[in-house]
Amino acid sequence: NIVFGNFPAFSLSFNWKGEGENNCDYGRVYLLPLDYELELTSLPSEEYSLTDELQLQSDWQSEEIVLGAEYANGVYRLVFAWRNDSSTGQNPPIAIDNIFVNALTCAPITSLSLTNAPEGSNGIIVSYTDNNTSNVTYNVEYKAEGESEWTVVTTTEETYEIMNVMPETIYQVRVAVVCEDGNITSYVESTIT
Image 1 (tube, rainbow, N blue to C red):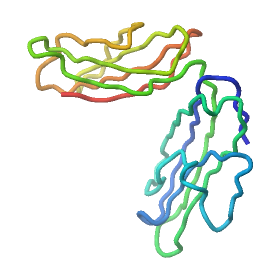
Image 2: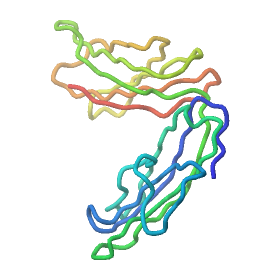
Image 3: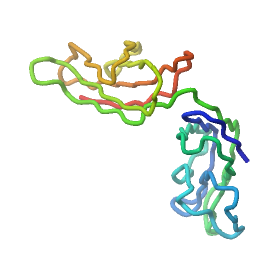
């Protein structure tokens, strides 16, 4: 069971690998109310699922799931489940490791939008939203595809324009919230041409 404190968001991270049979055997992660009755012969209701089907990966994968303020001050049961139809498939069914739940002192970005600036300005307009009520800043990072170095801009605005971009070039953009205490949330990333 996980006891969530009074925070605006939480991060659940873990590593997993699992094979199974395509579309038939898979793992899922659930966060259930304590009074939810688990049955040994069926998966919990999908309304409590935190992941899509976890399958067909023989190498370790990393997952990070941000949980919102609706979990604050509650107690929930974290369940890792495996479904197997017992026909064909590869081993291992699923393996889970390095499970961490962390309180976030501010909420991460909830949406990120990239649009081309009006014609003639050679820019990209980056818009993002979050659910923070306190003073936060934002790290906006961008680079042309293939470049190794990110350009980093810190701003207090929820919109930023990247100027002088190269035409017909794919740009990667990512944004994170910098909390008042200096902690940085996970990045939300997107691309645009």
